[in-house]
Image (cartoon, rainbow, N blue to C red; front, side):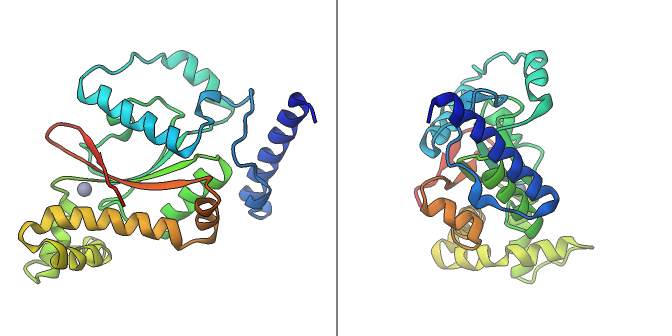
Length: 242
Ligand SMILES: [Zn+2]
């Protein structure tokens, strides 16, 4: 089969997969692993999981050094009007100080970002991440926590019985309680830092193993799930060795 013919099949398969996801059934098994397709809006984003992680690491280094690249908003907006192929998905805390596109020096169309206070896996976010990886073909998911996370701090206070919170915030602290309990075993002397770390680890493990869509892609080498912690003081993201 010629390369041109392969490319046409790739487009057809991806669009078919999207339509099925939208309303006719989610047939992700038909999707290719790494679609090298010249009509994708960002062909440079069709890369391996390790290359995607390396790109994030280098982008964060530029951000830390205050040496981010200038953005051409006009040309990227036109290219992305008809589609998207991000190279990484994020499960980030909603904290306003994080800003994933900024801290990885990424452009629009590069990162498929999901956010919730406490950066933990919820069913709606899980569906979004499945879409970002199985349909949009992003090869990497980063669970991104951060230092001094207020949501984790609230979960610690709730676990200690020191404070209750109004509305649905109490529910959030309950969802984050497993990370606090894990941290009490590993590093109770610096509970906040340890719970932030344990929460990221739990998120990574959950995404790697708990859903058939993601698990299949991880085991096939099509997807990597990693954890990172953003340092509010200097902007550096520490990627965890799990
Ligand atoms: Zn936070």
